Image 1 (cartoon, rainbow, N blue to C red):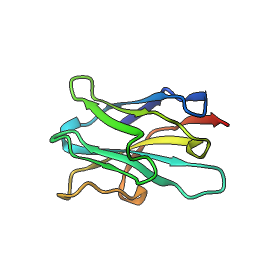
Image 2: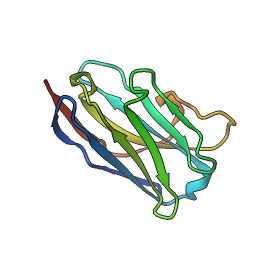
Image 3: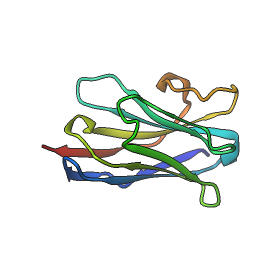
Image 4: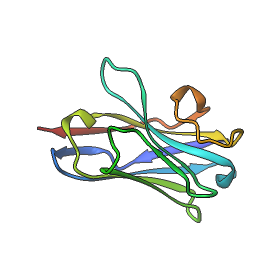
Length: 126
């Protein structure tokens, strides 16, 4: 059974940092793309960052480039999202998702992903 468990969310002031973790189980980690997505109240779910754990290639949304860093620890089947210089507009529920590597390019749309975690709340106060 595929499982994705997020952790690391919380309340931070603007300019602060958080590191989210996504612990994966039930599938061969290297065979999947892993992505972080977020959804704020009243807004559509959007892609934040994605990674191919097999070769380390990454994707970042323009809104987080230079502030967020995605990484994977293949030995622990875990993907991390280091978030620095947080802004109030980063406030959202953050989800980890996975999809089998059917394509050469990393998919970046939430609709491309098949497996989802339960989400973790990130709140950035102004």
